[in-house]
Image 1: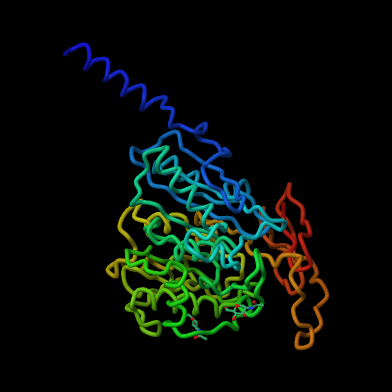
Image 2: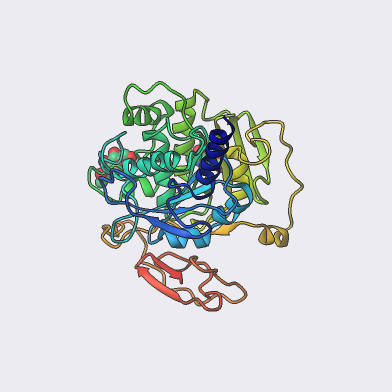
Length: 392
Ligand SMILES: *[C@@H]1O[C@H](CO)[C@@H](O)[C@H](O)[C@H]1NC(C)=O
Ligand SMILES: *[C@@H]1O[C@H](CO)[C@@H](O)[C@H](O)[C@H]1NC(C)=O
């Protein structure tokens, strides 16, 4: 019947334009109050672009310690790029004082264990349902504490995620303390060293019996990281090499100056890539365009061993590149002090370095910090705790 097909056509049009499934205003960061079961009280924020793709992909973007959904939304380019590529961004926000993530309790380190990981997983299933998103295109990324959580999400909810990009984190389970939102100095300082099989078993034990596919992992770390020591890069690569059946010591390819000048990519195969930045501190730049490629949202998946290295960029070009530097994981103020017996006396605060400026959200001070201390205009250096001051 003509009329009924016309009417149902109208209904379909209405549904796609102003559907009840639309849960937030588009093109701005919006909190979603009721996304289902939220056993650990994590807050959910959502960015839905104006130009939403049909069956959109989803990126979960997880903030650093002392960060918020708002800070990560403003300080990274995932939302901006969502307007171009039509995906949705979920920004979870930690419920704890100090706003690190719980990557230490058995609850969060277990599939459906009722911790932060469980709450974030529920945000994903909610968003897939509300927006008809593509369940095969869900990705996760984060920096520092958010990077720790990215590894934990990949380990506890492998069925949800297709790929992950980790910036300055630790291997999944490395921060285990048995307490909620604990701090594990053994791990942060790079002393939790295990074989790839042992680390893989840590992942397998977070979701016992799971046999399905697992997210492809890209792991970034700086060689000059004194918050989460560089050994954590090696341990995280060992972990996922063990999970995927690669040999940690034998990457298939080593690519210089990727994803930027001074970085090296270690390609183990389609499921695992490491990226190590020489001289890079815990304030690792993020490479959102590279992440989108890795996720398969743009271009060719860059795990492809055939991808040639771009010409080395000059320092100026690298600075101009669209990357974002965020400082990242901060030791919570409740953490025990570094064992002082072995540690040398904390150096006097360095004089403010001339000729360099810290951008908003970047580190500008703290015990052991030796970088720039001058904040960009309209931001000031605010002490968060003894180890970390930030330009805000
Ligand atoms: C820190 O984590 C390691 C595993 O990475 C564990 O062996 C150790 O007991 C943890 N430390 C604390 C204080 O719980
Ligand atoms: C960790 O990996 C980096 C990058 O491959 C390497 O330079 C470093 O020697 C490794 N560290 C250890 C202790 O193997």
